[in-house]
Amino acid sequence: MRDMNTAATKPDGSGWYEIRLQGRLDPRWSARFEGMNLTTGDGFTVLAGPVVDQAALYGVLHQLRDIGLPLVSVRQVETHGASRPPHHPATGA
Image (cartoon, rainbow, N blue to C red; front, side):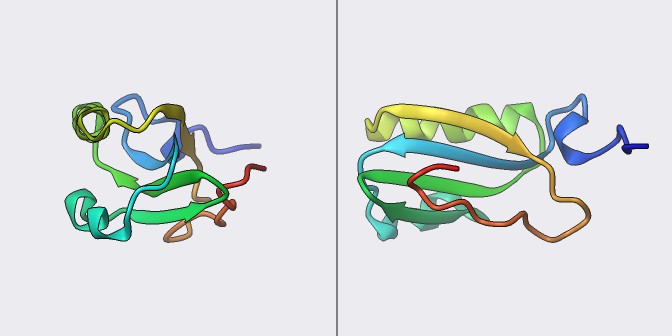
């Protein structure tokens, strides 16, 4: 049976998120998103890392809006007890 109290099902929204943007965000921006990994490739940028709650997620999205890159997707992923989930290349999958 699957544990229903995983990061991707917590009601407060905490957990690991992958935020995909269209365009390339220069690596110098990674300091602005402390604790999150910034990966670029094939015309996309993926920002991935832990988010403590929904308010923090909206804060990150607000900062990204100010940067001006189009938002492609926001995905909450399960970590299965690991420190971080397997990385998916910026090209998808």
